[in-house]
Length: 598
Image 1 (cartoon, rainbow, N blue to C red):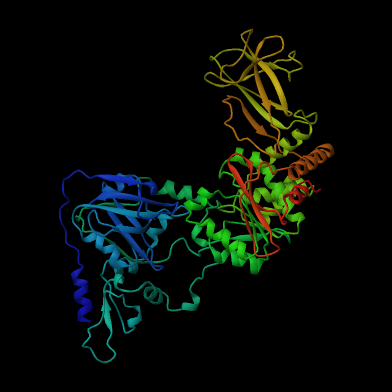
Image 2: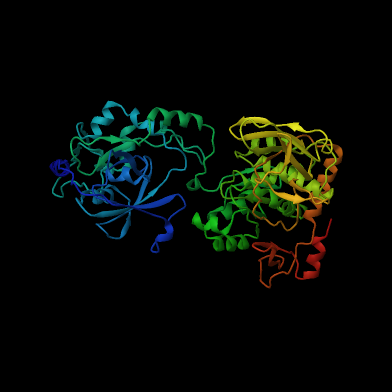
């Protein structure tokens, strides 16, 4: 017990004056580090002492930023935020980085009085509930400050850096005034004696934002130091958190998450380990994976794609990689038809398919919804509700609608004769007080101008619903016919200079994702029930893409799987998008035949 008290006394804080020296702050990304790799949500920052950070240790053993000293170096960095987890820190000033595993590792960086220290911190996957840090009860606060003690005989909860005297005999106990000298499991046991009543973690989802705090500690600071949780009003932050309720945040540490959509289709997040492959093969019965994640994304999340591909080969799982850029609606729109075509081919071969992207929230469910909409004659609204009802996600519904009209346009050779497919807002930037009209092919063949609405300042707008196609137009301002320099122009057959707009696009087997031309006009897709003719055109266009000849210049790269002597060939459907696919036979001519099979 004396040993415990002496250890407590040794860590009592001593006040000292802050040095009146200029602080230096450096921020680094993983590209600057060659000795170790950081995850996508980790960052590195180098701060001069004093750091100006107060850390908290939670029951689950996590060290995170509890508060920032106002005017301190951490706050000046404008990078470190409350809730960020401390992962690594330099041992000494300018020393090598070590992983933070226990209290001793964290305290080592706080003992130094001067020098610069590098910290590697991890940003939470969702907004941190700063306001809940204020909800600690009085007993917790007093205990964390070392003003309330506990006594116990259970040595199993004692931290490794606080041991009882070797000369003691009998069942000796100990008293501690600070929970830093207890293990995380021990503090959890003391905090809630009813272990069976402790809130368990729901599968893949934590029960609480953060577990109860074991201790709060920081470097020695002046007594008049002020601490805060950020340079923002707490009330506004709480309101923002309330508004964000229901939003989806991807947590990579929770592992692979998936849902069953049909007997042959599963959708979910990325495959991270060999164990995930085993689960898909043995538990789910997956025989093919359609992966929409890029190799760069996988590397950023620390996923070894070679290891995953080798594991799929051992488990007789066919892996097809067709990357679609994350959070890129235009890239999704252009590549979705071919992606759905790949899924249709796999299902035609009686594969059980796992459609995956990084988070499982957007690209993969969008592919499944588009398949149900295009291939099973299900309305987009019904397909969207069906998938989102089975799998928590946020699919890119506008991209699916855009791709739908692109497929219909492909069959109709670019001109749609049915109801409007897009809403176009024509924008004229002139002078306030002008009398502005819009005139073009779509205004009664240039005979019925539409008056523009003055939005404010020099901006005038006209909203028109148009079908897919190419249109010429101009503006009439104060009686003069003019074209806008902020939108594309083109001469007509008579040599007149007009503005031109192409509403919609045509789907292609080999989509060329090019930079879009600058245009002041705003085009939005219209989602509406399809006519019978449009449904027929959609089904025809989707199948034309699915069963087109994609084997353009196959690469001489192959290896054998462990069953049926399948041959894997790396083919390129476009210049920068490789597809790894199994042809299921040894002869190339047979595969070419299968490509055209209806």
